[in-house]
Amino acid sequence: MERDLKAQSILKESIKDPLISYVAKLETYKKIYDKLGELFSKCTIENIISLRFDLHKLKVSKDEGISLCLSKASQIKGQLQDQGEMVSDNEMIFVILNALTNEQGNLISIEEDETIPFIKLWPLFK
Image 1 (spheres, rainbow, N blue to C red):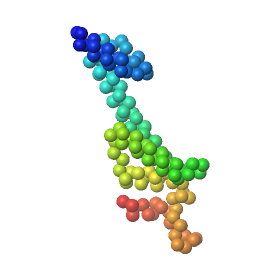
Image 2: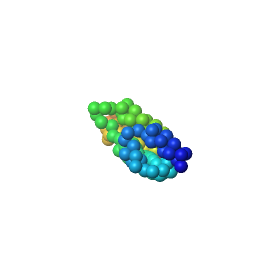
Image 3: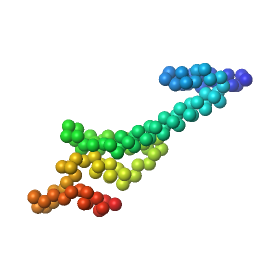
Image 4: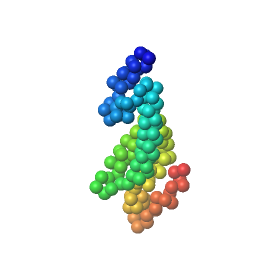
């Protein structure tokens, strides 16, 4: 019983304010531990889904430019990797190509009048 009280005390003292309301009234360290595990596993899954969504909805805006979009994509990739999620090079290529506007997605060929839509070149990147 004394060890349980000591464990509860240690856990509650180490928890930051936003989470303390979830565990303040729990009576055993096991219940506190289980509640924290439940909260963090749910947050982690929701966070991963949210980050993946943010990564795939990235678009290059005229105000921000390509370099800022690349920076955002790299930052989100890092956040996903911090969560233990892999982001393949192929996925990043897809994200970047998808983020480009139609104007940016066209390549200018040697002849000035002819453009090649990037979508036709996509199979070469697979």
